[in-house]
Amino acid sequence: MSLANKIMVMLVLSVTVFACSSNKSLVKKNSIAIHLNQVALELSGKKSALISIDQPVNLSKLKVDVIKVSEPDNVVFSSLVSFQGVFNEWQTANNHPYYYLADFSELKQSGQYQLHVTYQNQSVKSASFTIAENAIFNTTVSALLDYFKYSRNDQRYSWEEDKHIRVFDEQRFVDVRGGWNDAGGDTGKYLSHLSYSNFLNPQQLSLVAWALAYSYQEIPQQYKALSLDSAIIEEVFWGADYLHRILDPQGYFYMTIFDQWNTNNAERVVTSYEGPEGIYTNNYQAAFRQGAGTAIAALARASMLAEHTQKQGEYSGQQYLADAEKAFAHLLVNNARYCDDGQENIIDDYTALIAAIELFRATDKQEYLTHARQRAKNLSARTTSQGWLISNHIDSENKRPFYHAAEAGFPVFALSHYIAIENDKSLSEQARAAIAKNLAYQLQVNSKATNPFNYARQPFKTYQNGVLELSFQEGFFIPHANETEYWWQGESARLSSLSAASLIGGRLIVTDTKTILGINPELANFAQNQLDWTLGRNPYNVSMLNGFGVKNPLPYDGLDMVKGGISNGITGAKNNDAGRGIEFAPEPDWQNWRWVEQWLPHSTWFLIANTELVKAVK
Image 1: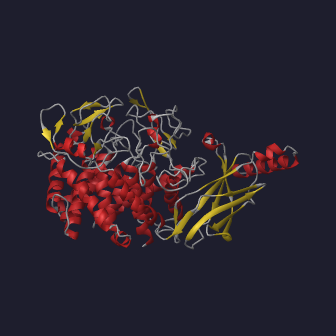
Image 2: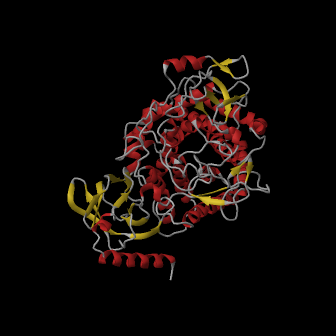
Image 3: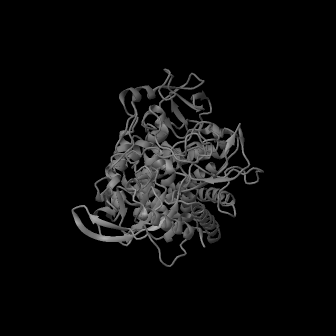
């Protein structure tokens, strides 16, 4: 007998016991909860919800009705639930360890809906949600653009201060006006941070500029239909102008504008920093992985946008392209010495790859295709036979798996863009094989454990006493014992990056005769579920996208929350080195930043993922 059948037998026996019991208080404990995307679902995509209960009762005959909000007595679709298993690892989130799936993907009628469940003496209705074509994009994109505009570092005091700011450890002053504040509680500006850790660099401010340009150029008619084309074009050039200002005459970008999170009356300077104390260092020259790769890609994209629209920011499209080429040429010589450990790793590969791709698109120069080929080969070589990626040198005795709290999908995303420019079939197939292996591994690792929410699990090794441990592990959340020695937080950006990678990469590796959103159904379900988690289909029933859904994270004193911004999200239990268990906003004060604070990469990758969703529907 299979494990699933054994569990079901146990549940049936439990129901018999409960039915024979006269203890009414026991029945009252059988409370039901509905977990679903509280915002919007794609008309032609996967649509599902989880029903959880706190006691082992058999709900196999439970019917879930889909009703129109405007016609609450009109049942438009009904679904029987399927048992998803007993899941105790996250029981502390809601004390509901028994999960059932209600799938209503076959409902293909636009409208505003709710789910309705009746069980014993309970009648439970879900949050309302929209089903439509391009549903998430059309519902949220205006707020996302407002969030980016609101996050501009353009207050008068910031504008004047950053016009004449000191470079740390020097008596040299530069103009670094503009850009975007990194987070709700941080007016610092980062191409990337955590550089001293070497393997956890996220792409921050420069990725915003690239994503805005990419999204508009991929689906311009969607923006025009919503009268948002002028707003997004203006935001692209705002970002490109800042990237021009932080390009040093020597050809490197200033990595960070930082004032120790506006604490201790610290001087605001051009710098890099280390550790939770924010100790200034003079390693402020950005390597590819430290935001320079995505900065080059953003400037190249902005140059193409300027040429196409005949618009620009303070500087011209020609200037943006000249900046991008200058910075790329400089890093070809100097990149390794800008890396804190003096060695390139996987993040250099995928960020240099996207830079070379965009320069090739902007210039049609063969040299950039040559560079792109080398980086794509590097990423293919980092792909193990199991499908996980190697972060450090591929010949290392202790290979570090690639895991990332903000951009786990970036390697596949970059390789997918590379295939679009590659005219050599054998090289395209090499990249395609790497994509297929990695996406297959993602689906496999998800299924290795009971995983009712289909949350993106990941490989990792913990880092203890300054040393990477040998033990290879897999789990739901990133380990807290990592190279930064303090930084771990919710993974909203990571989930959207994996959704984007699944959609764009999945279109290149289709094997099923029947597809959903142009990709294999299992991958389509995975891509959708990562966005669903952010929009409320999680154990806490919290929508991380501010202003959407029935429940958003609550700010702590002094935290600025903006509609369209996305909170960091849910993590592993705070005292677990491996990030096992689950936690959301347990602190009484500012230390809730790990879960609640809004951060640029979250809304950025969410925009990218939803751009890929629109492309899938077109």
